[in-house]
Image: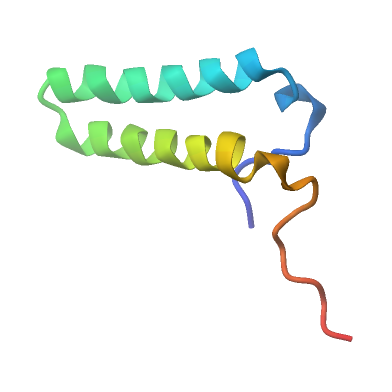
Length: 70
């Protein structure tokens, strides 16, 4: 199961992907500054996942899911 469908047309514009990553990592910073390390870590991991999905794995075209056995 995937959290994000990176092939959805909503994520096609670069500015939307950058904004989502900036908001999640920015919120992690706010949580760390507010002395809330649990929520800071949650948003940091979520931001890292978004970086992976939107910038590293985004150009694959298809899903990375395993194909069903034949």
